[in-house]
Length: 239
Image (tube, rainbow, N blue to C red; front, top):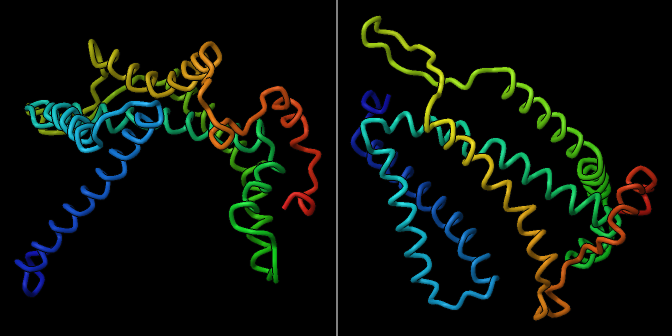
């Protein structure tokens, strides 16, 4: 399509510059998402050095996508590297923030950050009600339903990928086998395992150096009380 446009070389150049900038923006996001928790753990080293290590390891891992089997590994990481982990992490976040911490406490924190309601318009009221019902009911229920459906399809269907059949000159479905199955399991299990492993670690090794500003907001002795009170809140009082 670009070749048929007037001044196609310029549009082609701009198109690939756009892809480059999109890639750089993604890199900034995931590098900061990795090194920031590392520094929060108390690691003391130059930020540039840690960024270099992170980018170097990512570069080394990305070399497998440049092999003859690169498309195969792209399918593995694309189909199984983010779907279930992101679903579980998102569900864990919303349950921890809204159900365990309590939606009333969550809105108190929001008011602390953005200020109390002053000269509220109908749009402001609508937005508050919208997020109240989404956070408290709609999003958790939808995530649980999607999670159950994902587990059902994973268990009942064979894990397959698209492959090119040079003999019949067509794309066919081929089941994953061998080491690929173990890699798929690791891709989905490792990100999810961090949540319970970190909880166990913090239970066994409390952070004695935590100051008041850094202490967890969730009082786990009240978490179950907050969960049982999910249906008893009055939206008008909470927001």
